[in-house]
Structures are given as structure tokens and as C-alpha cells.
Length: 372
Ligand SMILES: *Cc1c(COP(=O)(O)O)cnc(C)c1O
Image (cartoon, rainbow, N blue to C red; front, side, top):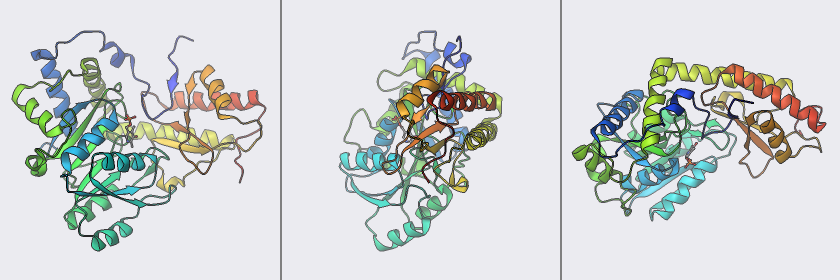
């Protein structure tokens, strides 16, 4: 097989040849040519959320979680109190890192198979005036559920709370308009729906709160305010930038613009999603979430009930056919996940479904029907 295996995961994702080829060059981190690439990437990122008037964007080396941690450390004062809306694994991670950053964190638990509830949030905000910030995961990648960003943003605005949004797996695919939604920080990364390679995150920070962020971070490397001030002065990243990742992102964003931007990306991912769920339904598989609350980003399926099913064998067999599936992240029920994002279209998704069908035949499993 002369094609790379297709990654049906929530990042790293399948990238285009153009994006891969962009990495075949060395760049000086202090050099004007590279600084121009960084500046262009930052401007284009702001355009995606229509945020040039209201926000700055600060890139940071590392995986997406580094930027979530940096956003909490930079935005939340040390005596702040963060309410984390929790309906899945990435929410729990955000709560954990908030606590580890020494901020008071209160976790508000919701069922994993439903969006977080704005009504319940409002009751909590009314009941506890000490809350300064709310953390929301836009698309909870642990299950694939889409959380009500607009409603939560409106509530935080009304109650005067800072909103920090982890939009890692939704940014550039689901619509987010900074002129319509008020958020203090919104976080995403290079290797998700922009279809770059992993290695850097970026945080949109509302200009109105930027000055107040000075000195909040107890970490030097994770201080986004310092990174922003330094970049403003020098055009350079504070410490060694992931040069190849940045130029690959610039190239991936050029293709994003050529494709038609966020609406076109959402349309393609939606086609991928439909092809996937229709094809899997025909094989007897059942999604974990109701379709109304499911984002077209990643789908959690119940594992087949058949005694011959074993995720490791299922995974290895699909991999041998060129498709990389993703394990489930739920503790109560056995599941696996399939990503709809990356530089793939419905054709590749149909091939993935065909590979799953062949895998079931090989394993002697008549269909994907779950236990109940
Ligand atoms: C991918 C992702 C992250 C970041 O994960 P990393 O492994 O650190 O890149 C954070 N939040 C969500 C919702 C994600 O999908």
C-alpha cells in the first residue's frame, strides 16, 4: 500500500501532501522570513473567529493541553475561583490542571451522554458569587458531544464571569464568532480541524482583559501574557519555536482558505460524519450519543456485544487495511471512537466503513449490534 494509513482519530490527523511538503525546509527562529510566517498565521487565526477587533491570539509551543494549562495560568488570578463544566474526559483534564495550577476549582458534573446545562450553570452562578471564571469544553472529544457555547457565553457575560473555552476539536469546523460571543480566552491547536501537524497551540485572549493577565502565571514557559508582549516587541517567539509545525500550519491554513474556510470545512466533515454513521448503522453499530447532540467531529460507537469482539484485534485488523481507529474513553460502557476530521472526504470514510465490515467478517462477528 503506497498510501499512508488514514488516521480516524481526534489528532494527529491525516494531512495533505502539500502540508507535509511544507516541512522540508529549515528556518531560523529569529529570521524575518520566519517572523512573517508567524505574523500571517496569527492574522489568519483571528480572521477565523472574526476577532481582529476584540482579541489577540498568542501561539504556544507544545500539544493542545499545554495551551489550556497556559490559558488558565495566565487568565485566572491566583486567588480566582474556576467553575469547570464537566461532561467528559477533557473536562476532567481541565479541572485537574486548574487545581495543579493552584487555582480553586469547582467541578460541576453532568452526564456524559448529554450537553452541559446552561440552566444549571445559571443556578450555580447565582448561588456562588466567588466564582470568577467558567471553563467550558466546546466539543467534548471524549464522547463527541457538542456543548452549548453561545448560551454559556451569554450567561457568563450577564453574570460578569470570565469564560475560558477549550475549542480544541471544534475550532475552524464549528462556527465561532468573537463579535457575537464574549469569551476571555479560547484555545485550539495546530493539529486538529485546521489539519496542520501537532506541536503548537494558540489562545485567543480578549484585549479588554489582557493587561490584567500580567503576572498571573506562576510558570515562565506557560506565561501567555509574556509571550504576547515579547512577540509584539520582536516579532519572534519567546523560546525556540516549532518552526516546521508553524510553516506546516501556514500551508494548511492556505488550503483552509482555498477550500472555503469554516463553512466548507464543516460541510466536508458533516459529509464524512453522515457517511460514517449511515455505513456503520448498516453494519449494526450503534452510536453512544443521540444525533441531535453529536458534533460531526468524532463519533463514539458501542462495542459489538458478540463474544469474539476484542478492541485490540479489531484495531489491528482495521489498521492492516489502512485505517486507524481510536479507543473509547468511557469508564461505564465499552466503546470505540472514529474521527471525522482531517484531510479526508466521504470516499475515504466509505473505505473505512468497508474496512470495518471486512474486519467483522474476519473476526467471525455477524454484525456490530451492541448488548442492548
Ligand atoms: C485534543 C484535545 C485537547 C488537547 O490534547 P493534546 O493531547 O494535549 O493535544 C484538549 N481538549 C480537547 C477537547 C481536545 O480534543
